[in-house]
Length: 156
Image (cartoon, rainbow, N blue to C red; front, side):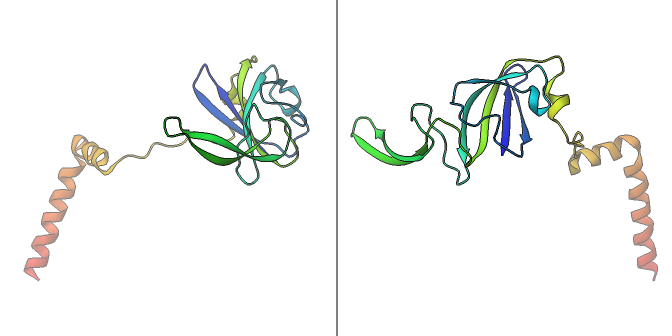
């Protein structure tokens, strides 16, 4: 199960893979949960939603754990409705993703606790590389080498 935690202060979201749903089992959307047991001490989150293994989203005002087909108004003026499958608001074993937001922050930032990846290296575009070569003078050396190579090819 994936836990996606959004930090409203930084505007970033962090993902953590959990082996079991025990912490969230029988919880409803809107409830608050402390994350001390999963290695994020001091943080309290509010559950904002989730989706099951087939990708159907949860709906806050549908009670229960099952998937239900409901009518949603598609166009208010024409009165057209659309039948859509949604999950109930209680977490069960077949939930695959839990979405949450931070309500109370802990002593350490989430980036330190949940980021297992090394920072990504910024890739430079071809234009940026060319500009660096021009500024360092390496472009002139390459141009001279290219001209010398062309002269040798003409002579042969």
